[in-house]
Length: 158
Image 1: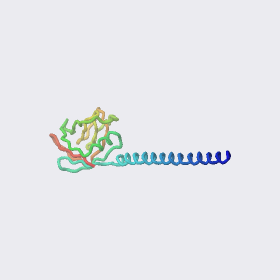
Image 2: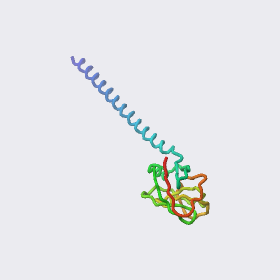
Image 3: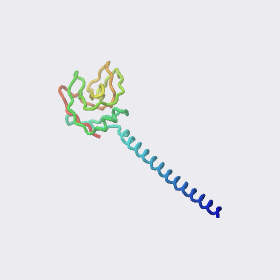
Image 4: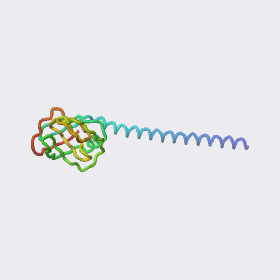
């Protein structure tokens, strides 16, 4: 009778271990699916390589850099901004958010460059010139018209 009890006891332990293993494996797979889904969401944001820019009713395409600053800006879209004139070559606006930065001195600013000055000042350059200032590049607008004197209205959207 002792042998029957030991065999039944061993079977019960084996079945219990198998059931626990199945639950553990199922939990691991669920976790992997969650991690994969979260990285897919990140990739979707990272895959946005351009955005629509409307300046005084003229539509342009802003080709985006792949960096944290740009991703943060894309997460805020859509945006409507009133940008002010500065130095006869740029329009700027201070945003209500501090962005991550990776500032460098480009030495030359090109017409159409869109950059972040400091951690909260969005700048659109409409003339090419040399600079000693540092910026974090957000992207570039091809075929940008001269934006003239005074402030402008800008809409940014995906």
